[in-house]
Amino acid sequence: MRCSVLHSSAASRCCGSSYGRSGKKMRRSAFVRFHRQRVAASSFESSSSSSSSSSSVDVDGAAQTTTTTETIKEEEESKGLTGETLQKLKRDLTEDLSHLFDDRGIDPKLYAENVVFTDPLSKYESFSGYNFNIQMLKNVFKPIYTMHSIEKTNDFEITTRWTMKMYLPSFPFLWNPELTFTGRSIMEMDQRFPHECMKHVDTWDSIENQTYLSPEAVQEVLKQVFNFTKTPENLKTPKYVTLRRYRDFEVREYEKFFVAETTVNSNTGSAKMEDSEAGQAFNRLAGYIFGKNEQNEKMEM
Image (cartoon, rainbow, N blue to C red; front, side, top):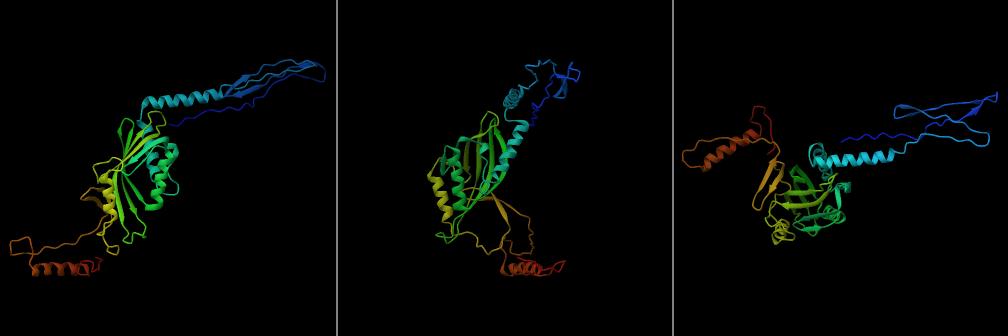
């Protein structure tokens, strides 16, 4: 919500009395422009021994600003986490979490000083502890965070779905293990405007026991660290993003790619091809890839 606060300066002109050359007293009046209205300042007389003046001064400006701010706060709190307030908070959190592991970092204004953060391997009860955990992950694991969605899941609850990939250093991990976690962040927001994050709970899709330092969580990390069966780095494969990583399988979103396929007739009545049939299919596909196509164009496999 945009709020415009009118601010007026106290640079109003004050009127006083003066004497003309004839010695007769002359009256002079001044007009003050204030909030687009003309207000006539009172004229007055001064004696030869002393002079007095009067002016109009805005003493309600500060109080009016405070009252306006409190009114806006009350109006927003009465609405709850809905409408434009909700949409702005979602935009702010989306922008903020995109800087989770870069040099800019997260914005402390979006989080309560005593925010509680928990995930299956860590637990903190302050923003400083929460930020310490982020910096530790950033410096040790070089993580890449991708948010897939953000939505309101309860009256004052925001839930995000994400993927995080982490890379361990080459020494002493010579096999360059990659760790992939997918899950949800459940953020409990303060009911009071501006709805700071009071509690942040991360859950992983790959485990069921989400409690702090659960044996299942520790086992999941060790399983990924000592996984020697990853795809060789020099092997070209279609690019993809892991949307969900469960205990025994992954849900992936692949970038667009083309697939060449062919059909051969089989007389065996079995789904398994004979060697001659397999050779025929392979030679046909190889010819297509190496230029026997409508464009006479060679393709990379």
